[in-house]
Image: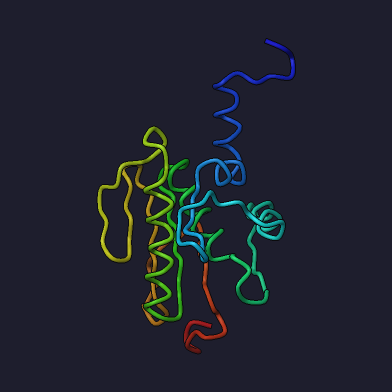
Length: 165
């Protein structure tokens, strides 16, 4: 093997340790135009954002840049690669929360079987995986006190009730 080639185990470890590589390799989304499954290719802004996620990040941005989608993918990455991860994706309306949940469901269903954590519980707002990780999709107004999350994404913060802000 040449010096610049990685073994299969080294490639797998490299992908597993990089949210960006993992998402590029394993995540699929539904194309807006033709409604078919396509590999999720993050934009430059999404890639830069992912590179900052090892810190606490508050992002003020314009709408429709795909950050909810990248957070769905990142939450799935965390739950598939790290046990006992807990992710919350919160929306201002139930329909938006359902859309976020459906994105995660699509991404999960398209994962290769060998990297999927089995689902031990699934309802309309939560996936609980065999490794103790979970993804919860919620709506503004729920009392989240007492819950502990490693990742929180709040979609459309400006539309949230004043009590959440």
